[in-house]
Image (cartoon, rainbow, N blue to C red; front, side):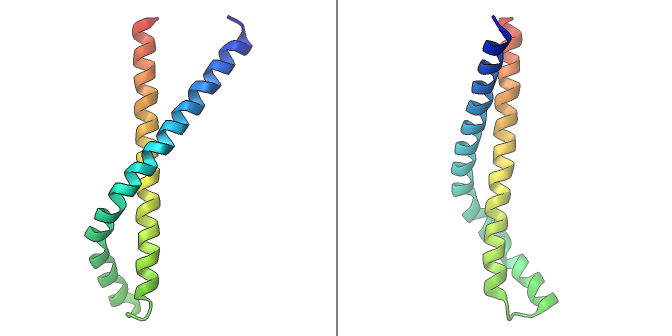
Length: 96
């Protein structure tokens, strides 16, 4: 097998991992953001109110929702991509 063919196969594999990880992370963020936000917003609002007053509670709520959503997405994507990569290496080690 030529080097170009190996590199093309590697590129397709990496793009597939990235696509699967992104799609799975979007689904995970969709389902996990609401519950995680609900569990943490009272503490965040309490903290921000005690430090900065309650004038900007709407801004803190919007900011915290974005932070929770993006954090959930990033953590899920990293976890899924790592799991797929490790699984692929384990499978390759058994085959070859």
